[in-house]
Image (cartoon, rainbow, N blue to C red; front, side):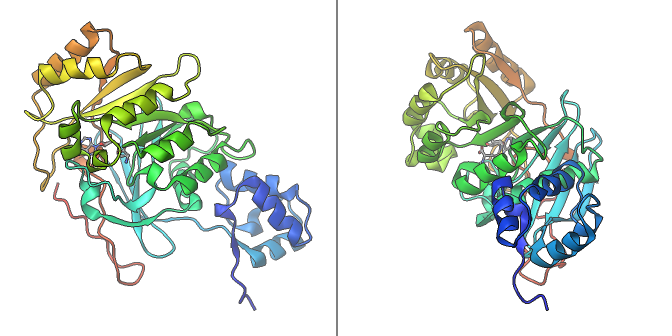
Length: 360
Ligand code: SAH
């Protein structure tokens, strides 16, 4: 019977679901009810959507699917950070991380399987890029974490800082944000979502024109073109100067600021001169700096600076009026910290065991 491919509701914005219902002869307003079930309660089985008629539920189940990533495994860190290994419909695997009490509750989600950016200190980059995630797979991570953690109906933040470069998967990422923002679902405000990017410039310019605006975090990591060319290869195409110019033009609401992430690598970019150059570079930009002392890993040819080095760097920024924070890395014991998300793709059948490439 069911030979026609079913439409995947997880990939639809509300208006698209309304149209899909209408084209099947159903009333549009059921879309809001369905969104409520999926995004407010985590229900993905039409049979359980009890405010829809029995017959309608059966018809919906025949015409639609609600694809949801499977949890292969979850690991909880001593600090409460929990890493979820998720399997997508095609068997590819990604990771999403719950970071509690920062003081807010944060979901860190992926936008791609792997990453094409190849930043020199990031393990995910070692995987290369396998494919983009769909909007449904990006928003689906949030649904799965909310369900697994019993957090439907509670407040949380979302950071697009898992695997992948969100602006290298622009359309799906923005669609996922619209799905997450829908008032009939999670009703996320842009202020609770942070998009972190290396600065794919054409996409950043496009982001500047979006009606739905997340907070922006820029992975800067260096203070000269040469240094950034070496650490963040996309800088050879879209350089530091153009990136900062785009940041200057980026529309910010009152009191909003761009976060500049700066991974700290011993004897590479952690000197007082680097700090002073950073102060000068950020002049005239409404920004703040988040220092990320490197999370070391086997195969990453850099070291983490001493705390004294990090503090001295932070002090120089602060003395020059730059707001600065140092990110305390969470979940390192389960390899869930920044730059530590990596899965080996399994080309075998779905269900094949995942091999984590890293040793604890
Ligand atoms: N592709 C996006 C999201 C990536 S992860 C981006 O680059 O912004 C979020 C942050 O973790 C980025 O700033 C990234 O550069 C940083 N990061 C990557 N590897 C790291 C490591 N080993 N230690 C600390 N931070 C790291």
